[in-house]
Amino acid sequence: MRTTQLTQCIQKEEEEDELFEFQFDNQSEPQQNLQTPDFQATKQNEVHSQISSQAQIEQTDQYGFKSKINLKHYKDRKTLNARVEKWRQMINEFEKQTNQLIKERTRKGIPDGLRILAWPLLANIKKAKEQANTIQKLSQYSDFLTKEKFKFEHQIRLDVHRTFPDNVNFQDQTVLSESLVNVLKALSEAIPDMGYCQGLNFLTAALIMVTNDENAFWILYRLMTHYNLTAKYKDPNSLYREFYILDNLIQQYHPITSKILKRHNIDLFYFTTEWFITLFSTALPINLFYRVFEIFLVEGEKTIFRCALAIIHYKEQKFTQLNDFENGLQYLRSNEDLLNLDSNQFINLMLSKYKFSKTVIQQLDQKYKKNQK
Image (tube, rainbow, N blue to C red; front, side):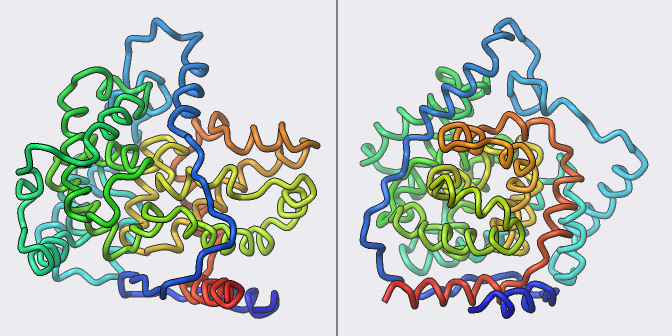
């Protein structure tokens, strides 16, 4: 697809009323196998360096993080109360709501206390249970935890202790750490051809900090099946498709950054792999991640690329001033400059500046597949 065609598609954003569904064919693997970097250890080192000067901090935010970045609360109580009431009414009669109304209200944000009710509806976990019952004759979360031994349990437990090192909920043997182990074990049984893969621990941990184990499991099951995230975990080579699509979008929206990346030979693999594998749960402040995640549940894959572009936007000014590979890559992989982002400003930028439809993603996907033949 030529640049002019891409521009035309981007300028004409489609306001889809239907929830986005992925329908991608199998693609040939790139010649060079992709090895996912051990970002768990990297994340642990980053966190330790960030809080080393505040080792005595005792205060945590509502999710258990030691840093104070998520301590901000919505100050406009009138607006918040009105939003709570609207979501309560919508949740009670969710099947009667139009997709457009769900989309609009999700973009504005779901009140914290109602996420536990809204997420299962947005992800449509009822369909996940029906699918599991059809394929495996199992429809209860507990059905996937009946074994005495689990193939991936040892690796899961190792990774759990490296999950969000600055969060007290996952240190030592806590209730949430055991919940994380159980949900990941169940998921590895529910999708045996995927099993357990690094990165799932962060995404799962982010979910169980808001919802219960059972809901988290079915939301993850839905993500892997309906939203087709399984491929990212089964075969890291599938991420080349995401790199290709994002690279083209960066050329379109951030041409200067694109040129500098190529000049310094900084491949997107080096700093965006973690974004895609964890769905930004390690890159963004947790409250902002939840906002992005909820929009993703409603609007689908294009949300991932919009979020990536928004991060590029916030990093672009400083990045373009760096003049070598090492410093440039180090800055792109760091999330320190993202910790104090205003959630509303980020979401507004993400949705207003990067207006492209699923058609653009589909066209780039087709071009990628053609290039692989």
